[in-house]
Image 1: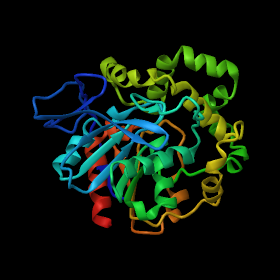
Image 2: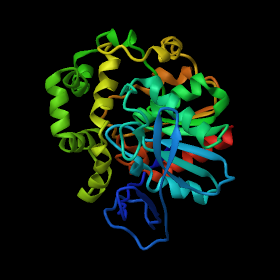
Image 3: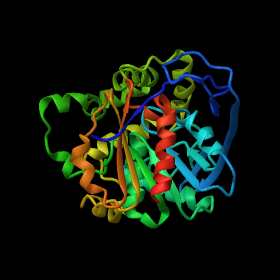
Image 4: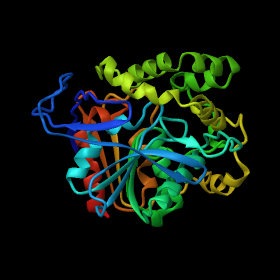
Length: 338
């Protein structure tokens, strides 16, 4: 059996929509009360990176080993509100960018395609690393962020010192996504089929916050987050490109949009489901209510030093925010494997 950690879910109250803070607590038990610990904060920065002007938070010493933390949908950088300062205290330089379509990240040109396909998000990470003069980093994430971390590790292993992925190996292809699943598995992807319709696009545009709250509840059924916790992240969905990116991401998966021609070479490589050779730690929460593969189905895809951890304690899909210490420990463990 893989080793397990006991996850801790702690409430965090931020001072603004785009400020991260860490709070030390005395108990790993689930809590909705901020303890009287020492807090650290970092205000948002911006950097021109490829086709984007990327909003990101930065923690830690500028000469520390770089770590890039990637959020998913429908979440934002506040999923790492406790992880990032914790890692900074451990000596890492931590970069937490808003993905395209979230927060203060914007497109530098009105002519650029609002594309949500998997390789586009991965190339964004490479562009951020180039813009910040980071030759190599530990890449870690969950949901869209985990898939993006997988792709960086698979296509640019020289840029990825190690990597941490919630729910393991998530690289896909349009061809692979044509295969039907069992009915119960298809049910879990109901929103993907909803987004395939014009009704779904309009519905998400009109109700994006209610939609996101529903996903938070179903993906993390045992996480009792407060309204303030959700509302802090929900502000990131007001980005003018958010709906376009989300809809395109899910439509691209089903082959309903073609993607960008410049990205086709990357997608052809990803369609081969490449192995990942960089040191890796994969994580799974014991109460993940979102669609996710069985760990046994992807273990063989990791050909370098590899560890899987089951995070116990009612931990759902938003693992970094629900179990921040376990996620930080996984970063440290991946660093030690490198």
